Image 1: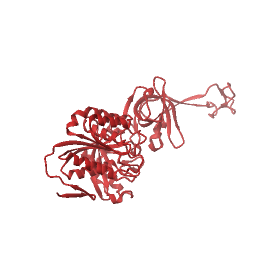
Image 2: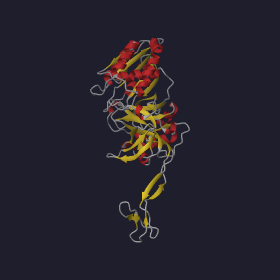
Image 3: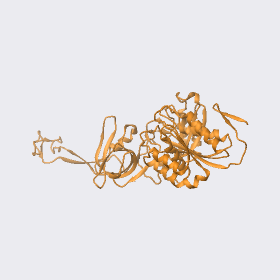
Image 4: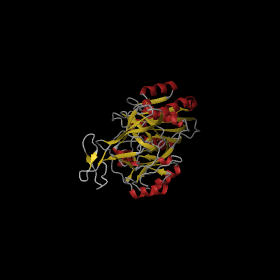
Length: 449
């Protein structure tokens, strides 16, 4: 039987046969903070399985709840579908590759694989779709994933504590439901012999790619902070990633980029840039840690900048509840917007809650309160500010002898406009929807352009 080699791994070519089985494969939690990438493993598998007589379609990159504390980096799961004549050979090969490439030495790496077979597709669709949506917005125990896989009769495999089964089932559910908002990401991967070394990518070509394709692509660069965003700095295999509205736009941008040799590349359909993680909150009492919300309220206390450069203000709802909202230091210039809010401003905040604090990703300012400052009154004779004449005695000019009973009230001009504001690309979460994707969105400040 003929063979073909992929990265020193020998795969036997199957005889030509008509595809008889459709299968969806979901994989999650193979990487660590020190290296590897689940999307790379998926891309490798797609290339290899295509070489043994299978038709690979529709690779998905699904971002899950961003607040999960035990996630590795981006909390992403992948899935793809195949038509194959020997499903067991496919299952064995996938398990072998996941075992080989996963960073199992890392305590937080706990891979999971799920397989949904042809005859199961219609039967499990609704429950896996619900599980997918829950995995993006909620916190799911590992046992829930195992129980669901067993209940549905799915073939699955877990490593260590098996937490990755949550993401793999969710990604399969996304494959069975095409109705969710989506974008695309073009991912280019490095050759294995340079993993962990500094990346070689021409910066000018990235700016050119952005100029040629924006706003059909976004978050390649951060103009306001003069930063390249699409090239990671970790030890994973990704060379660069381009996000956009279509396969055409991300491909066009990628073709412009000059870089070190690329081992392989892949375009994933994804829920990035969709705000899928956000839940509407009627009131602050409904809010829970490790969830993400859209919340309307009134600013109760002006932002205070604390140690570390984080700016935190207090937001209240109409029922008398309050929550701290933060623009953390990595959001850079966005903190300047938050610092201009004053008590009485009505806003809608978008963001995730951890430790009872909402991390603001976007803000929509609906109305601005009048802002006043109070000063010692000016002397009508010499224009100098009067001094206090003592408790309850008003104010007096020592030079002219003039007096006044009350402080002078000055209405201040507001240095902020109504509308949407967002964090800059260098601090944007994968799931956060950029303002350029909002239809008919009025926003007075767009970072750096």
